[in-house]
Image 1 (cartoon, rainbow, N blue to C red):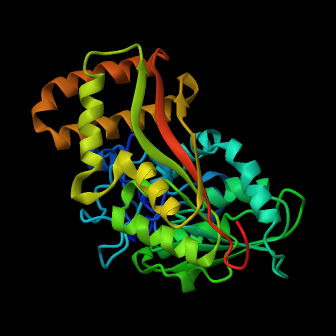
Image 2 (image 1 turned 90 degrees about the horizontal axis):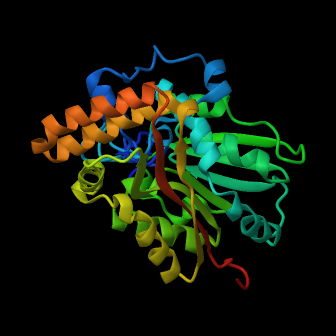
Image 3 (image 1 turned 135 degrees about the horizontal axis):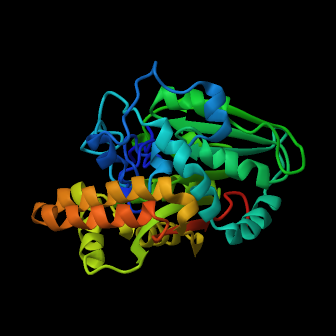
Length: 362
């Protein structure tokens, strides 16, 4: 399974622009950021020019998690996360921009069934062990750790050591009840994820990851979680649906082209949640899915602008014949966004897979 940040994924890059962080190293989650990077709207950073750890602590997310999961950054490996010797670099500004929207979108309704399952797990002296796949700059941990009770130890997986540094520095220090939260980082390719890598895990998480994986990679992930007997909370997978108000005649065509762009090179794109649900169910897991849409209005104009550029850019890359009409479309949409007249809903889906505990009943 490729690494989303080394996302997508996230990332940590995000390969999809219509969705909104991480495990495929270099995928934006279908994020429009890749296109923005090409046009100079968002530029990749190198390991020396990024923000200080304190800036990341305040509000960072990794690119993959930051983008609507739509397209990969310009410097990402075109073959997908986990398929390049050099880890990609992602723009911290994009990650910071999208982190609040990601946090607001994630499905809180999945937390109660998750808490019930976690409460039934055997207690460990070091607390709950959470593996965050394609962690990017760690936005998933900053969101989830403070919502769970009890001591936690987060194992942050990513391909990019630069992002792993920021994730560790910006990690939360306490759980919902004040218990201690500790972290460690592991750099590696999630394509080689095995049950042994998840030994002792109480939970696996990822954000904006599934849509930048192939069906084979999703199968590997499901098998590893099932063998470890731990639940998986996989958030912000692009759903392939976008709503813009006011409506425009090109909305449907741009959406279709973007979705085709997400599926290129064998990635699942908007089919990811269905594929993952089937893969986990085949291993006997109970699977729940819940909508987790981005809702972007005047207060999120900066994010909506970057998302629009990436979303339309990916559609044009997929269908070059759309270049001229899409250019006019983008100008109109950006003008409406700047005037506070545009509303966008980018649909995502969160998935909770409750795998059968290895030592007992489900």
